Image: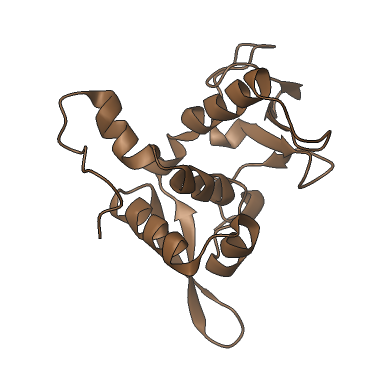
Length: 170
C-alpha cells in the first residue's frame, strides 16, 4: 500500500530523495538503527510506533536498499534485526543536518531534549552535517557520535554498515 504519491521517477533529484527520506517515520527508524537499535521490538518501544507503521517503514527502507535484515538468535528462535547498508550509511549527513538545524532553530521542550553531532576523533561538537567544524575532517558513521541527552550521559558511537550494535563487529 502506497503511503503517498510515488516520486521515484521525478526529474528532480530532491524529489527522488524525498521519496525515500522524506517520511518522518523513516528518518526516525534510521536514527534508531544508527544508534544501534535495529531490533523490531526495541525500535517499536523507543519510537512508540504502531506495528503496521514500523513494519511498512522497515520494508520500504529494505526495498530502497538503506537497510538489510540480518538474522540473530534470541535464545529461543531466529529473528531478524535491521542493519545499515552502505547506501543507508550515506544518509548520515541528511540526519546530521536535521539534528543541527533543529538545535539551531527550534526550541527544546526541556533541558534534556537536545541531541548533538560529535566528531569522535577530536571529541568536538560540530555545526556542519558533513565535516567537523573544529578540525575539518569529513564526518562518517565510523567517526561520528550522537549525544542525545535523553538517552545517555555520554555520546554514542554510531552503527555502520560493517558493525552491529554500537560499533560491535557484526
